Amino acid sequence: MDGPVHPVHLVGGTWALAALLLAAGCGTGTDGKPVAPPTTPAPAPAPPPPEAPDMPTRARVLEVGETFIVWTWDPVEDATGYEVDVAREGTPAEDRQRPVPVEEPPHRSDGLTPGTTYQMWVRAVRETAGGRAVSDWTNYIEWYTWQDSSVPLPACTDQRHRAKSYTFGHTQVVYEWQHDRPIRFRIVKEPIIAGGLRIGRPNFLEEEILEPLRDMARRLEERLGYPIMDSDAPPGRDDYTVLVEWRDRVWSPGWGAPDCPEHVGSPWNAGQEPPETILNRYLFDPAITCRGYLRDRDSETIIHELGHTFGMNHSRILQPELPPQELSMSVPLTRIIGGDSDNFLMIEDLDNLGCVFPHPDFPR
Image (cartoon, rainbow, N blue to C red; front, side, top):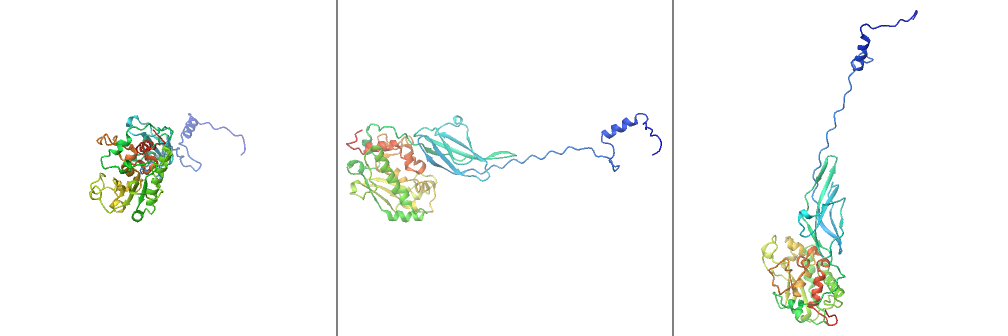
């Protein structure tokens, strides 16, 4: 370009107006088309709230001590955690502690009181970006903590007399007790083995009869210092041998479990004269699946029944209408809490049986 360059002057503030229009985005792009103003992105939609998880199943106990209980349950698919509520039996809802958050089972409750019933509820939790959802609470399960084994043996009072006053029969093994002749057992094994196979329990004889009897005999001797039972000895004479057998009979039709058919009667019962514990007709019938029968197939029920053979009735705490002169079982032994006699046969039961079957070398 030849000659001097002269500045261009916009007239009447036109330059200022152009600058303002460009700043407002109303100009044109390099291609001459209008420039679109910037836009704010629309907010992302909120994530949906989670669906409630399924309720936990098969709540149960793994381990028990004097001051702790280990609870567990089957894991729930898609649960991100759980809440566990543990309370002493009978605690009003408003007095219970806040539920404890748990990542996964099992859960151990510590600092419990020895010899006390506790109840446990559990529910599943699912937390996502959309919120938090919970399942229904399970029905509670309950368990006893072990009693303090260091508690000294209490003095005997009238336990032996009370065992002799048993309403349902002459307690033969109590009347004829001799300290140098521990109680033995005559077990008719073949029908029990066959029955166990019918309900899918090939080890029923060992797990529900032989092992619980050995455990009870051991615990009595450890606690008292002398044997009351000798479950491994061969049967003796009828006067100090308890018969254990299955019989094809119905005992007490209309027996108390509300969901059992009336015709089936009681699954187990005890006799005092002759001393016996009897497994009845429908115990091994797989078609009978009401709660009472399911419990008594898998709860070492023979120990409860043996308590009756030895002159003990149910706890008057649970059944205050029972005769006051009778010797009572503990609440756990009455209710067969938890299905393990190492837990529900309490120290108070062992101590009472020591008074029912005394030894002159171990006076109380």
